[in-house]
Image 1 (spheres, rainbow, N blue to C red):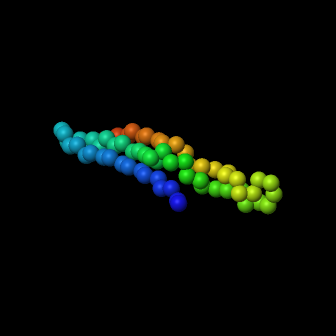
Image 2 (cartoon, helix red, strand yellow):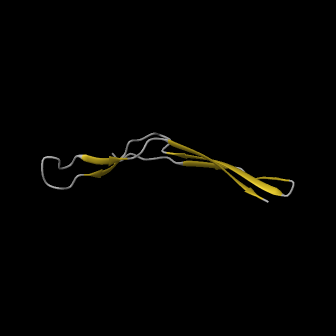
Image 3 (spheres, rainbow, N blue to C red):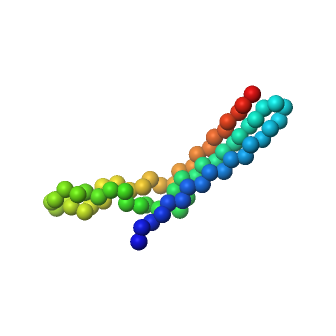
Length: 67
């Protein structure tokens, strides 16, 4: 069964005194799945071993300001 990753982004645009402020919160891999992204395909004793997995949960905060 393939695992699935869930990413979310929340933004809110606020206008005040002729300026626009947009804070944002980005959440990547919310479910913290360790999905397999790659396997070794070269024939030998390591054939089929996992070579890379998806990174853990990541939270990113940011803000845009327009004058």
